[in-house]
Image 1 (spheres, rainbow, N blue to C red):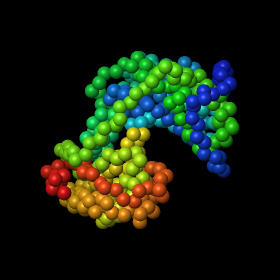
Image 2 (cartoon, rainbow, N blue to C red):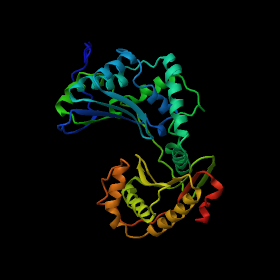
Image 3 (cartoon, rainbow, N blue to C red):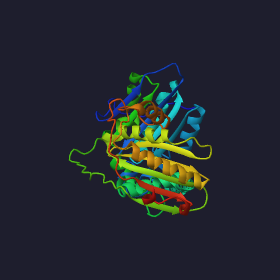
Image 4 (cartoon, helix red, strand yellow):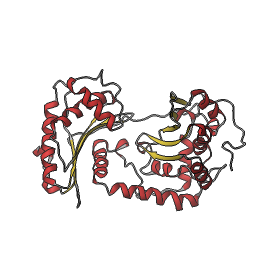
Length: 370
């Protein structure tokens, strides 16, 4: 068998800047950990670099091979994964409650001990990242949402989420990027069904205790995220047609636009052939409101798009208070936070929307025709 915690020596204290959020334990036997690395998102680096960093997670470390970690995790009945958002690198693990020390160790090792070997980068990281990107690009809804980000923000949040191969990187680039980010002040740990005291104890005994603090003289100046409205983009391709209307909004208006999303969604008729989504994706510096319509029947896309933009115009300046219950349901279904809905402004003047169409672009109205 194997030892859940290797015989390594660590500090007995945690870096003060490390942020820990814990959901109280329940009767469930399954626990989970999520580690967010702020500043390691797609908006914070040259296009594709953050995705390559996420794809390098859980490979060989100075204390354990990737194969050994995989086998040991499977024997314990646990799982782990990494992903990238526009704001952060995300590491996640799900496991039986009694195996908390092993997975605390595993996640900490990713941040403090990853080797970033050149052969792993060439043979594993790049091919895997390329596969993920190509698979996502095959989904017209994903392509439309990516293009909506590009025209709404251009830089920063407008950068592509995944590595597309247009820039060339090396294992050294990934290692340097990680070294600049894997500091205690940028790390947030979110635990579910975990005893807080146990988590703190195991964190002190894990590689998390080795994470350095950011240099005292390090100052990061960020330019404010610029937004753009009234922009249109159309991508011709065969297959399903997707139309998406979007508006970049201030972070303080995210809850209000969740009410707008509910107002627009409620105005659209039920359809068996079309998939309709109305969401507000929150980011650190902005939020992106969108209503997307996808169908193999382009006439249905056109009809629902007209109804959606008409409902958006009607919602502008109107009272949105009655849409709170539906807004909470839609936000919950999309995995978004419902905090702030009760105190959200119930009226807002809606600016010009952005429009992206992917598919049969000739049969979908132009923005100025809506």
